Amino acid sequence: MKYQVIIFDMDGTLLNTLDDLYDAVNYVLLKFGYPLRTREEVRSFVGNGVQRLVDFAIPNGQNNPHREEIFADFKQYYNIHGREKTQSYPGITELLQELKSRGYQLGVVSNKYDAAVKTLSEIYFPGVFATVVGEREGVRRKPAPDSVFAVLNELRADTSEVLYVGDSEVDIRTAENAGVACISVAWGFRDRDLLEREGAKQIIDDPSELLQFVE
Image 1: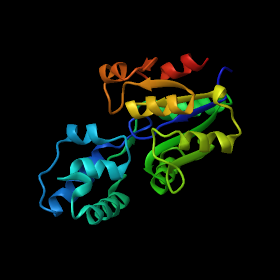
Image 2: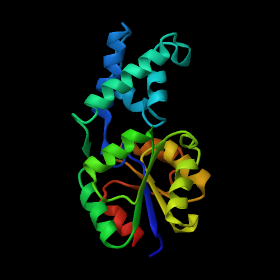
Image 3: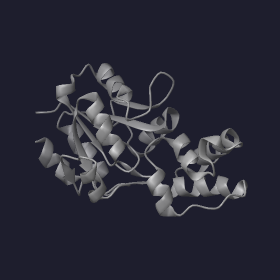
Image 4: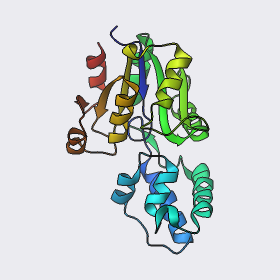
């Protein structure tokens, strides 16, 4: 096998979390009396972690005087309601099972906070991933390579053995910063045109294409 380890982004790559994130964003905006955001606006905000998502959504962003309170309310709401509409993308479960059966070690890196990433991974893909890394103390948010390096350290893998799979410009930059190969997916939160403009070297439209690529 050319690759030994395949690392996946979560939101927009494995799971379609957009509707639950959209609901959580507008819940806090409504609570604080701010203008609501459209689904497409929230879609464009996703990819840099939930704190940045909230910052993009609220008036004055990081300078909003209620920022910390809004973020706490967002997390509380999302922890309760964050799985009501979330689903894995069609073909993803089958892809992961097939990759694991072929001997690949699988991991997840995400800008979502670590506890949520681990919970979602076990709920939607129980027993599939060798390691899962979200945003936590000591691990800088993507596009910093920290989360990728954390996976490599745990799996004792070299960068030459790794393929990174993601749906956004953040994932492209993360792979570049980590020095690993990258494949972009066009079914997530960014369209093909944006991925091409951001320098994606390989783009797939269906999970089954990943099997062809790695083999």
